[in-house]
Amino acid sequence: MIEVSDLTKHYPHAGRAVAALDGVNLRIGQGEIYGIIGRSGAGKSTLIRCLNLLERPDRGSVRLGDEELTALGERALQQRRRRIGMVFQHFNLLRSRSVAANVRFPLELAGDLSAAQMDARVDELLALVGLQDHRHKRPAQLSGGQKQRVGIARALANQPEVLLCDEATSALDPETTDAILVLLADINRQLGLTIVLITHDMRVIRQLCDSVAVLDHGRVVEQGKVLDVFLQPQHAVTQSLLAETGLGQAALLGQWRERIAMPLLKLSFVGAPALQPVLDKVGRTAGLRLNLLSGTLAEIKHTPFGLLLAAVVASDVELPALPAIFAREGVRCEVL
Ligand SMILES: Nc1ncnc2c1ncn2[C@@H]1O[C@H](COP(=O)(O)OP(=O)(O)OP(=O)(O)O)[C@@H](O)[C@H]1O
Ligand SMILES: [Mg+2]
Image 1 (cartoon, rainbow, N blue to C red):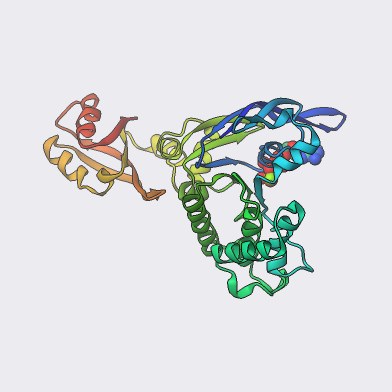
Image 2 (cartoon, rainbow, N blue to C red; image 1 turned 45 degrees about the horizontal axis):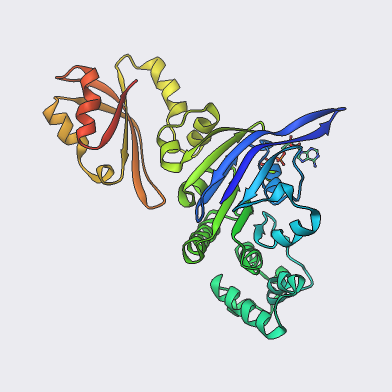
């Protein structure tokens, strides 16, 4: 659906050009929810602005479907941009317009529909985001979550193929964040819409995304299916982002390693085995006694997963045999 090749963008800083994006490659599938995560200044907003070409990259290409956006002239691009919806961190609503009029605005700009058709479309969109009862309010009379619902409805007005979200939940409290993430997941399912979502929060990635790319200093340092990246993070930035949300073991591991002389096991459970008494079973058959050091049980997009870090107190089998024994129970075991 979206193919980004060698995307590079420099900004002048202190008399020289500094790369905000440095050879970024991405492939985002039709109907996928694709997360882009990174620390502040990693280049996330620059990347999303280059995806709809609000910003022209210095080098590289962006393809949407079978069209190369980077090859289009300004006029054609303006047409094409209507098929790309955008949701902002600070909502960017028009203060003097009502909720309904904000949602209607992009329809007026496009000029494809009659007044009656526009009204019908606005009704449909307000129902989709659950704001029918607030249509006459001004943005100032809405909560943050409601403002973002208006932002989402407006972004969907012209039936985009892609929805770009730049930190769409960063200004919201955790509960409201959850509600907006549920709404985005519903929209993705109902409309089959491809969503590209930028965040600095791994919990957002875990709840919503199918795939993720980790951006650092303008480069993609890691990408893949969310489950794979969460269970086997490769890059230090990914590991520390996970550790901050309590979903990684990297930080903890460093501390424990120094203090514990016993061998350590990292056990990853995905899907059904996460809910089975696997430790008890292997413990008895292999005479394995463990001291649990840390553990997480959570869900990634409705798939349960668990991560355990344990020290081996005793084992009847040689340690190198343990991964195969755990594998028979559907659990990945690494001897650290
Ligand atoms: N218009 C600009 N002019 C000059 N430098 C810029 C401009 N926009 C971004 N930069 C620089 O490019 C780098 C990447 O910025 P960007 O806004 O893409 O980061 P980000 O990952 O979105 O950060 P945050 O999480 O804080 O929003 C930063 O070093 C920033 O200072
Ligand atoms: Mg940003």
